[in-house]
View 1 (cartoon, rainbow, N blue to C red):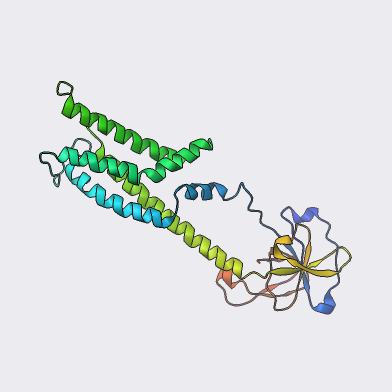
View 2: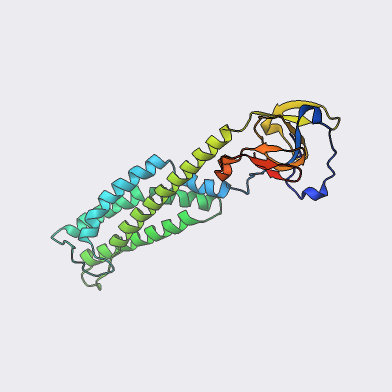
Amino acid sequence: MAHDHSSRDHSSYDHPSHDHTSHSHKHNEHQLHDHGPGGHSGHMDHTGHMGHMGNLQQKFWISLILSIPILLMSSFMGITLPFQVSFAGSDWIVLILASVLFFYGGTPFLQGAKMELKERNPAMMTLISMGITVAYLYSVYAFISNHFLPSAAPRMDFFWELATLIVIMLLGHWIEMRAVGNAGNALQKMAELLPGSAHIVDENGAVSDVDLKQIRVGQHVVIHAGEKIPTDGKVIEGNSTVNESMVTGEAKGVKKSEGDKVIG
């Protein structure tokens, strides 16, 4: 097949016709997909801020263990819960565990916020960091006020909320990283199915083999019978049956003729 690669309106191009009937080829006009810096980079930057999935998994489980005694020994919005445990020195234990949880479990968010602010692009990491930082600092202030300033009015801490926020955010980003990793692996496997080179037809009708990465917009590509389609596009000459099971799940070949779109 011969393919004309174009990422714009195909009607605006004047495609010269080449006679390849002796090779039983069909001509296709294909569309290249440009995944430039404005495409998926924003999402990849976000996941890059979170580090490796294994690190997030470890941080989640350790943070979950640290949060359990905090949830048992601290109050929720000043409300005494049925399962709450309190004894002499329990407030100190909560303070120590919450501090460890903040500086350990909150590190990915604080580092991510630092990178976002450095790039002048505050996003989710900055928002989460603000939440956990305000909750921790105010809770430390409430602890000092309640224990060392007896004349001051009682202050309500937010260690319970701090622990749940960090654990839930770590869990959410761990799940997100797994999903992104699985999607990346699937795309990699699909990319491995593509041919390594393509038959390019020049303006004089001569055919030459080039690397798949060297295919440019406006070029015609010839595909022999039984070969894989290197890129998406539109048939401009010939007809054949194409296997699109990787995209549609349909094992039966799909008939393609002039004007039909094909998927590489």
